[in-house]
Image (cartoon, rainbow, N blue to C red):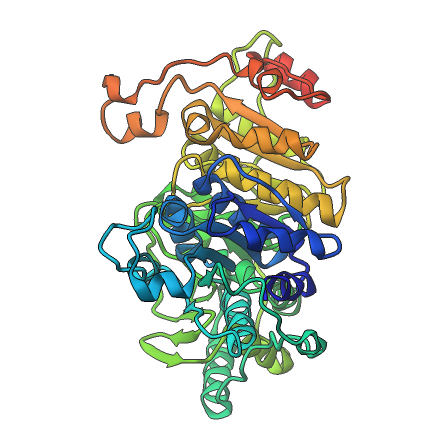
Length: 518
């Protein structure tokens, strides 16, 4: 059964398994080595492992996290909750005590001492798309298939409790000959037809329409549909901070990043004066909307989501955006006859030249770094100055941006970088993975750099010396000592983790970072 689980994951190109060994999952971990091309990452702790699984999934569409019962699974839950909030497909497999031990309610280690073996499973219920607490070997393969499918299709975490005594029992290998069905269920034809007709009517009447792209367009694999919609309609297209990298920012109709009142003035004006907003995959959190400061002048707003569509005040449950957008694309050209494309905002991305000795500033860095990015990069920005700063940069085509703007758990990106760089190793070893993290956030999850070293990965790790929790200072407590941190000698981290092939640099001026980028 254990091998069956990993063979199924391998069929969906999940080739790295994240987690920490514990006595209730050790027999299960043996099975990883029986599957061709699969590896056990071996993380420093379970929280980091969950973050790594999240980062891996954002590149490959699915990931697997294995923890032990109780102590291990609870350590991972903050990372699993983040994956749930941000629509990331993740299979959380927990090695649990044998069925006999559960039946006898034995006073085992890692339990609460009350004989209740289901309590941790219940804790995971609210942050899982579905769960399974497997108890019957005959139904186990079918349950595993169901759980993997739901994690992949709905892009949410799924919990699987696997008793230690079941993983070595035999199940038919022939079940693997039938591939998992990972297709979306079709939309209701009548509801979808009504949605498309209404959207076409709104498009035909619009003079200043725009497209606003957000994170779920990327998470639910709608990038192609969005780009085609922009090409066909020629509407100006904008992204939110979370949606950054979902659309080609070199596209001639790309107008910039919309963050409500925090937007560039010309971007704010273009978005808010539109007479039709086609919103794709919105996640309207506070940081993503400039503290809920969206200010559309129109009520003509169409929201395409992964599980429903909303037009003005009417909601159409179950009309999923991928199929609805494809249907719309079939007939949108005829609704565009009266549309005259207007100019899109042209946001300046140049720094004012100055002496090379000028002290490096946030504003200068985030504008300058655009010139160093290249097509295909994976760019990861930590909650805080990095996530806010990256909005000022321009991404090349085929870039993947990773940030945790909704859940916002500090330290997330160090673990996520490990997951992303291991995924990149499997896809194309030449693909660059770039992390921007503040000195405060780094201290929460720094051990995962050790795992990056272990697997000889080659990420670029930019540590911003913010001298403490700068974003917190700006929210509250500018001079409060609780926003201070113990400064580290960060250049010593790679030799500390026993790296063999590495480079470290400290840059403090615009001239030094210019030299580094070139």
